[in-house]
Length: 288
Length: 303
Image 1 (cartoon, each protein chain N blue to C red):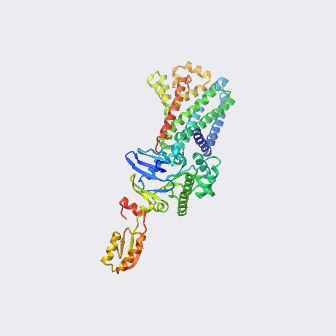
Image 2: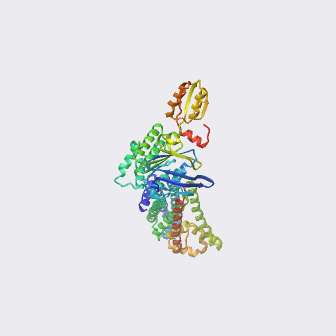
Image 3: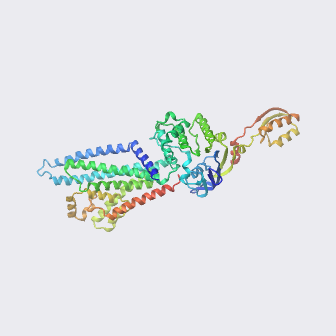
């Protein structure tokens, strides 16, 4: 089975490279990093002509907030890339008939799904790590801001991509390509919105509205993991400011007062495992 | 092989898609080394049967074996080549790479792969396009590539589902040659087609399917009942008419008479008897036996 999974994973990676998904992602991300680097470089000059030029701490705090926004853009790009790579990889090949000749070989169907998932998960992780590393270097060189937990931030971003990749693959074993893509992106958006609505509930002390975030983060953990990325990027000054501001700051969608607890991370890992098993079973039982 | 040595054995296999019954207790047996034709109109259940044989779809009833193993067992497909009706191969790969992939999937050893790939390309007439991207191939070339994919790994059974839909006349001629070549090598071929002439020319046995059931099956010679003869006679006597009616049902066709069911061997004797009786025989035409006639007869459609 390992040989079969390896064969399909290699094929999926070759396809991603030859169909220019990898060069396109790399090129686009490089442009984004260069543009944001130019933006960070402007921060020290913002108050230069005023009576009160920005202090180093202020510049770094500002840079941290901009970095969170840029990372949000990367998380969206990562989700989009995962959806647009995964949906055609399974549903597209089923619709076109490409999958028929492969499944008719002496290969277990679960190897096909597992191989594709592994290859695309590798792309997601490498992209998340490389893109965030480049962005951290850019912000560091331009403003001197170093995220307090850079590795965790990259891993949380990668985990967001893996969650959306897994749900996309599961959906694509039963639904057409376009429907899969639309549903996956809609779920991603709804999960983020659920987090925002829950934050507003917390800020105004409404426990029922606050539960919206909890439920949405359990059903699709993209927003919960994204909050982990936010926390990893926040300097201590922001966390102190947040504590002073009180619970009202929970309504701000780009602030996280605490990292996700370990039990939640375990839930996320179990969620990915269960959805992947559902995808394997769904594909195995499907009539082609 | 199955218990009786059959390459494919289906016993009472049914398949239901929602309210549609695609296969209705289908029985089928394909023996080693034969070219077996599945004949049926569009929607008769041919492709459903092939998909169940290959484990691409699960039967809702009945059972069967493929090369001696239960349907759906991946190991059963190790020595099976398949050209689907809906053929499509990754456009970003070259023909050679597609064959390399399928050689690996079929478990062909690394040292045998180059030979297998070259041989399959040659059989499908694609040697000149080995390094061409599939995306640049015409529909016909893609079907040829599909044939090459089906032949990789020297399979014991080759399943061809409507294999000539995109081929030109020359390609169809070559395909028939390829199928005959496979039979000479002892490879079993399951040929699924609604093109009767195609099956007539290459099959040893055929099964006619309609609404998911086998209406008739057997050796091609048995299925192709003699077509009969057309006679232009003058001065047919009562005795002469009795001779004709003894040979088969007689029907008028303008100035000609049609005598159904008369084989080629019976013609000289019948003509001699008519002449001896005093009937003048101006013309005799042997009507070619046709699978189409049999097909229409079984389906109850008018000629």
